[in-house]
Length: 267
Image 1 (cartoon, rainbow, N blue to C red):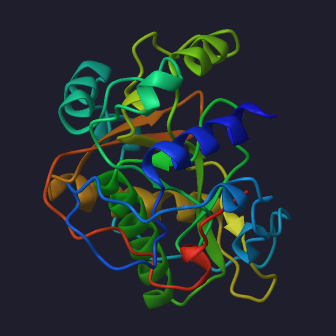
Image 2: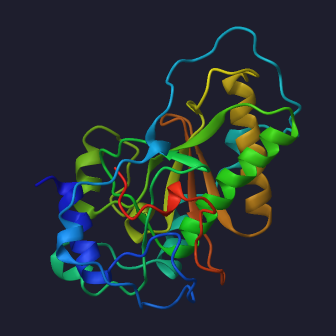
Image 3: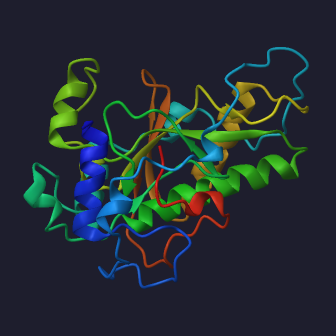
């Protein structure tokens, strides 16, 4: 059994992970809907939002009007220490073993590709976040879609490249990424990475946009979220991503707002 599926079964049996479309409950509630064992052992359901076109359109791009927040590397420079303090305040203790799953102090949500974002193949993390972080990710993706549509459109989604890590996956990551820290904010379920170097293209229908404009549009969205006190952001140069840690606030339970995102099982 793969590590990802193993962790998924651990989480479901311990917390009965709730799908996005179920009845809303307080974010702090640990009460989740039951999931039977037969359902747990099923192969993940096909998710149409996992489909995408990887082709990069180099010609015929229309430029976007961007409210620049340059330079991104200087603007988004929240340190690991600051983000770590926020992660410990909002999240749960790092997951070292099976027993830790049974005693998580916070509810968690499974993150699957949907209309607002695409979840990349996760090699060093697992698709889970605490509810506040799941809501923030949804809101960033929705704001990106809305802003793009308001400026002439384009069939693009943001790409999520990293979510929940365990100490074991952090050690594995450190072998290939020297910037990875031993005490990672990703270990608390509050932090995720969004690529600024790659975006998902859902259709080859024009208009086409440059990746530079899409990166700056995403930067504009993150700047607003950060100004609202919803997150800390670090511009990661080597990994070509925004490293985002959620700040504490009371929210309604995370809802994607579309049928596809309400799938209980993702890839």
